[in-house]
Image (tube, rainbow, N blue to C red; front, side, top):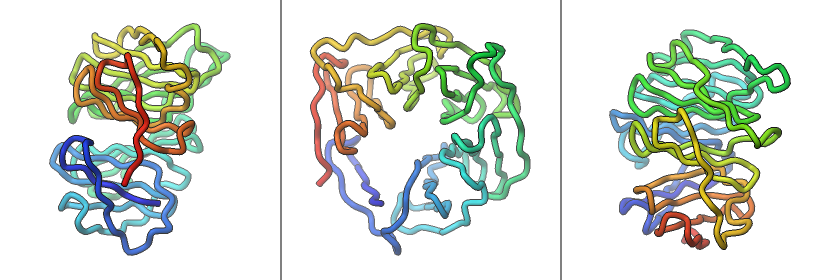
Length: 239
């Protein structure tokens, strides 16, 4: 796997060297106190200098595919293989694991796939079959926030919030949804002439409501970008 770094909000990218380039990376998390965590198949990596040097920590959560750290040493792990379990860490060590209730809709049990936090207390977790959960106490408890009807059988790809109110979610049915009320309700962003451009988006970063960078398996894991609020989408390659 490769790591790229941008210092101008995604306009240009440069590669970062690691001791071993054979890692299979799952995701990264940038904390509110400016620490960087990188989750791979075999290791959890930490950097305190924006990726210049890395500390290799054992990935203590077997089969985890996603992590989010709010501050150094404090994070939450989840992933498809963990089902409804969330593992929490303090000082980079697991201190508690919890089972979170499946959806009350019996035909669609929830597998928690990705988590983000707007701040150290308020977080959003997305699951398969389009279930959305929210926490207001740093991950101690979670409640179902909303469910996107009409997309049964599809799975979310990624979630990103610009602020406490405005957020975006992608799924594997070529759809991107937007919320203006913190995730309580969502509406579909029209595709316009961008047919297939939203296929399997698994990573999103928004500079503002009109400017976004995305990654999609349908485009060879290259970058997609928009600068006009999704009226047009273009594909870019990392140098």
